[in-house]
Length: 324
Ligand code: UDP
Ligand code: MG
Image: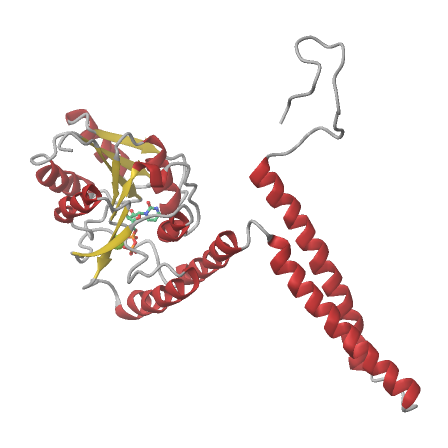
């Protein structure tokens, strides 16, 4: 296992003062016990001199590799690109801003060698702003843990280790990188959380503020949908639709009863509700069917033929159609 190849993946967005120090720290930690590794810096459209700094590192040390984005695509996209181009049997991700401590990398690798598929860092003593970062993150973590049923203290920590199989074919965008453990849980994985050091940011600025909370929540909704219903979307849309239609029918029956048996004039708002509920319900069901078709295409591939042959006679090779 000593010969295991390690890929370090680092998203970089305007971190000119940090990348050089980070490189040194990583080499000091990894250079000794593990000798082969690569450091993949993903330059996510930096507008400062980060790219020039990284080129300087690459010129001196060929273990430093750079993926240079055309523009800013976001941290998740950067991590995803790093995964795609990495060679290691294990991959460690961390922030470029020196907030994660490379000294924690060996214990992450040890846990992966013990057999865990994902090792999550937990910033137990987080050094960030209280109101704009720690509070939303505390609530966010509780919510994510409740909805995804993957129990972690800290979903937002970039310092994590992965076995190669786990990140293969993982497509990340938006704020998805924090849901990697949840997405990966679909294929059944062994994960563990370990407390890691967290340091204050000395150079440069944090790229995020409160606005991120909204994106995190929207992504949570889509993750929940993907995890629980993407195979059978009709179940969620269809149930909602049938419920709406039933409500519509009940209120419709009530209107008829009032009008013909009690001889009172119809109740306008209730009439509106009846019509609306039936229409919305119907739409939900058709939406569910559409989603179901999309899910089929997604999972089975699109069957382009609009016909099905029973036999093929007189053609070369086989007479019986043996296509799947
Ligand atoms: N980052 C990035 N693209 C972005 C925003 C951030 O690659 O659009 C990188 C950034 O350079 C850093 C990491 O993602 O290495 C975390 O960013 P930041 O420190 O701003 O987040 P915070 O620690 O405040 O959550
Ligand atoms: Mg940071």
